[in-house]
Length: 173
Length: 78
Length: 80
Image (cartoon, rainbow over all chains, first blue to last red; front, top):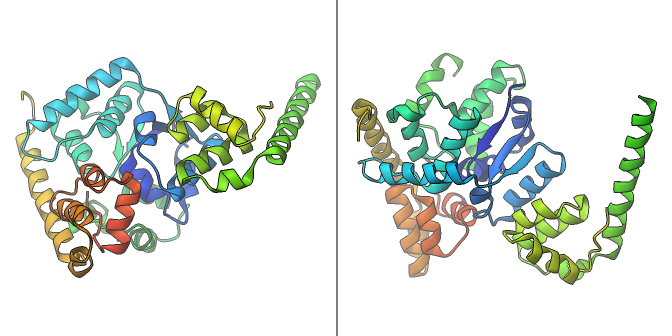
């Protein structure tokens, strides 16, 4: 099991719907949730999932660090000048934390995924979508079939991965 | 090493007792009438007694949440 | 902005455009059009942009509540 991760809203609101969500903790010791992410969650299912994770010590709330916060705002501002979808503050904060603390960033947000690709300042940040998490779980032997599990995940969350997304896992599918 | 084990066991029992006390005195009617964010936070607080994270779950300051748990009849134990 | 990988940027523009097409295609337009203006506009905005945060604010809902409405009731798949 590797170190820690930091998760944003887009990841959590899907993952909490997934019937085998506890598998996340086969990959990570602790998954941090920034305060700004927690603040925007309101649905019972997601919040209950968070509360249960906090209870067993596998989730933790990440406070706002002023320096990280400042840099996140700068990232938001920079990304707004570009022709792709801008990064919002909670995702930007996760990216900065991912880089500064070496945490894996868990997100489904297009803006954040794009930043990792086009902004050299964040090229070293490991960013995973649920697709990638499921693939790793399968490679580690925690899932019988990557293809079937992905189908289940897409069905339960209505998250849709395009052929472009799936191309890198062609052999496994 | 044995002493550490005994101390640990003591604390585990202590926190179990505290949880039972919180559960016993909580005003469940009030709690169940709350919107999801508040209700989940209060239930979490009853289970764990952790004011800091319960307040975060509720999106409140610790002071505000402390007043809320008083209104919900939940004693601060442990 | 210095140092930006232009090629990757273009790739993402294309991905996000493709995502919009997918959302438009699968959305349950009959359901969306039956909703009161605030929710309808929020869902239409979400279909067009994938920006759940702003859409949730338009709908005056929590982000997770809004996304649940979009995916389970309005049939809008989540793509990026």
